[in-house]
Image 1 (cartoon, helix red, strand yellow):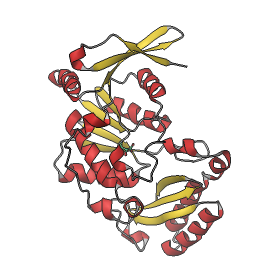
Image 2: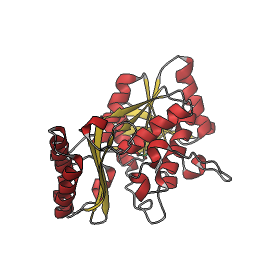
Image 3: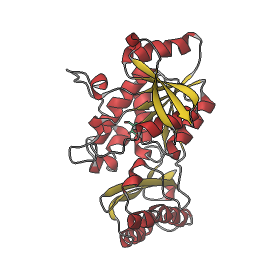
Image 4: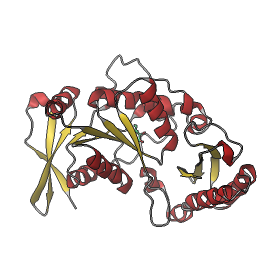
Length: 309
Ligand code: PAF
């Protein structure tokens, strides 16, 4: 087990810490963990003065192999990699899981140290949303297509606002998001385009467990029985995509697929075929490229997934 230990690092005025990860007593590496905006800007200025490209991987922590794949992609695409860890209260409704969202900071730092990330940006809620904070990004287009937005109406406002802030704080050349949160990826891509943000938003393929379940920090909530049923979502998505591709009508395919998902114990929020770019409704494959998107609850856990047709 790799345990992070505080390390004497940057000066107090930088208000950041260097974390030395130790494995069996050997120091592996020092990972700058920055908690204040001023310190972040000073650190990033060093990279920029050397004309080094910067990739940002925004996360809410509880890192799993899917996040680490985003970091590896970031490392291939830019000289410097910044990972943000911030469980963003603004994207959770009061009845949602903000307080119980998994927080595994020590393990996250160990994994990021092993990947030789350049800097971890860990603002507090007060640093991100200081007293008097009053501005919100209102996302439209893909954010109002009746998918996640219909079930989590607060969600994309919170995501767009925090990601806009992260883009402004880090000013990355590229930013990497997982395709598992497909609508989120489209919302952020549209926001960056519409607000002329000088960042290239890159979507990375969903990482899956061996049985097909999309990796997600929320999988940690699943009981053993729920975990056993959970891969059904991906299996049905795959089968539905194959059937639609083979010419079976979309509406009939999705009706049968919804029934199969419910039989596996899920309560469905939506299972839809949409235009892969705009997320607009589609009637046939001719309206494509298509993407199937699903959100469904098993027990208390809400899972989402999607697949290309
Ligand atoms: O996908 C996530 O983890 C979050 O929604 C994000 C993009 C880090 C914003 O808080």
